[in-house]
Image 1 (spheres, helix red, strand yellow):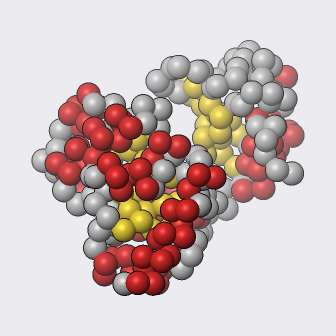
Image 2 (cartoon, helix red, strand yellow; image 1 turned 90 degrees about the vertical axis):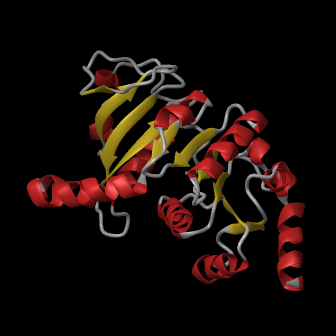
Length: 253
């Protein structure tokens, strides 16, 4: 226990320099899977809040030091503060109880109105309740599992394609969303002028302008890229890296 307190104290002492990280509230099966997927997507700035000591030990055995772990109840403001919630870029509410996730979402949104907030639901939860308090997206793991089983039976080809695009370990190409940052070499240009596929190998599937909720799929060649918008693209990791460098001048070469 003393070692755990020392490790956490050392972690918290580094928080002033930590910004833009993702906080996962709940380190059970769903939270651990979320952390694993973030690491596969090359997000290394991950913090998990977990109150159960056994679960924390399991997380450490899985992730080692690649994921920061904060001990405590994620619904408490002091614990969220210790995890740097005010400077986080994203929060995943993965607690086992829907009521806890709802209360957590309320607290997080009050502490950081700009953070991207995603919450786990259960079968009896109403998504509208979460959206009314500012949750950006909701996910029902049991429902998704049932849908996946159904599609594997009636639409096996589509299910296999979905697995190929989403399975981080096996896929050669993947779908991803990239933001058009300030100073981007492509900002202000039409898609036809950008020649994205020729320059990077990525295929543009959708375009979402800034402050718009939905993507425009199969955008026309005259569609213009503007700062703050997003591109949905399909490509291999190296191709996505090339495009990311064109969209974000801060991307290391």
